[in-house]
Image (cartoon, rainbow, N blue to C red; front, side, top):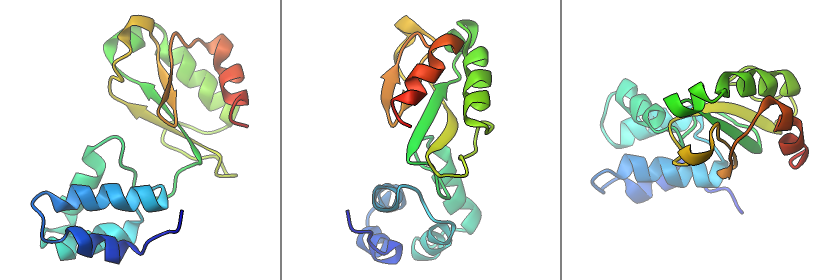
Length: 150
């Protein structure tokens, strides 16, 4: 997919109510993330303070400012997943990938992020890889899941 210029994308949504969110979605679809400079451009285009434009971009867990890995691994941090052992899964993911939550591997293959409930509470803990859910994840099956994407 050809990358569109974020300034052009912002212009397309500039006069719509709630257009900043639509613009961020379109930018992320094109780039895979929201470049830092796009937040400043959005603030200017939508006539809001930079802090507000940044706040909108960081409020939604599916939006990400700055580059992220090709494979985005999210782990649910809701109470059911936490109780079911999400902490052990987090430690194992961090150990296997050599990064901490919120970081991206040096090769750009993986990013680790927390997310709110993904609606799969019947089989906790849950992780998603590029929005594909994996239910009932344990420290013991993390390596096999990662192997699918390496």
